[in-house]
Length: 401
Image (cartoon, rainbow, N blue to C red; front, side, top):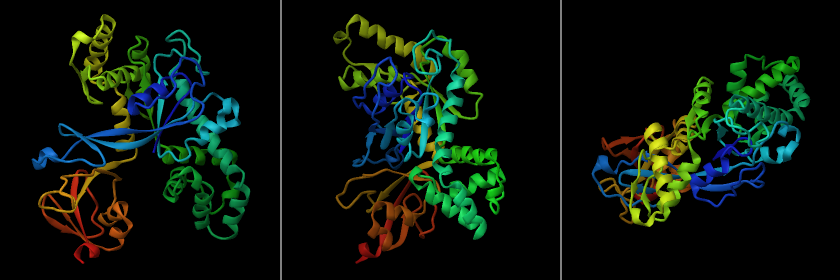
């Protein structure tokens, strides 16, 4: 799951609505979103149907003229303000919403048109780089507060027993935040802290570890929103110099195109660089002007609205996901009902053939014998590392019986 985060009034709910077409509340004042909105968006990837020259029959996803749209879970978190980690602005409640998020998309008002509290100001008055630093600090301090409650006990236990305990104890304490042992191990490695003697760590050491853990366990990209505002250009250049993936975007334009597509006024797929007007006679003058503005000032200038690019980058770059297509009938690339390339799965890079079998169904994983990779018709074992766009058939004891 990916969390959509940021201060109030940056376009978070517009971004969320544009990706999911869910009816999130949208307004130009802070705290419009009080409860988190959950919805389904899609990642966009070229389907293998063209390569194999087949007409597919998608079941768990969509295929639009060779473009596979795979559903993913998104959560629109309520806006954060400075001091949220201390409870300001219902901050702790809002931060708790991102506990299960595997990655974060930080919606930043790149125009500088909203102050640190999310209030509208003159474009260019606020520095959006401050918003990046503020959100880093809030999430780090929130995580530090959770860990600090038991830290003295954890540190003493580690020194009394063995340093290996630090990984299991921290994993147990932070399990509700979707933080894994591998994240903790990597954070300690990067910081160079002595895992044998955590009681000797200073306050700065402790916060450095937590901040590093935040970066590893909650990777984040910046969606530089409101690129249609003139003051955005200079700020965008400055944001791109930070140590983050930065995607220029205009959530309002994406939402307008998605709604026009719903009404069949235009042909548009999320992530396209242009659109086709279907019924120009049904558009009034204002609608026509708005659509042409989106085409000229956003799509043709930037290549897209950037919203789909941000979703794709969160899953494919931050989370290193790949797409695989499991099938039963290798000859026809179909399932047992004859549906061709029915499912497309997003799995982390490094997933094995047997792990994929478990993802599909526990029994399939338990009875796994081998798998066959479709392109080379090659038999592979349980430790075969799946590659992006693999089409694979799993042979199990149950299937043989």
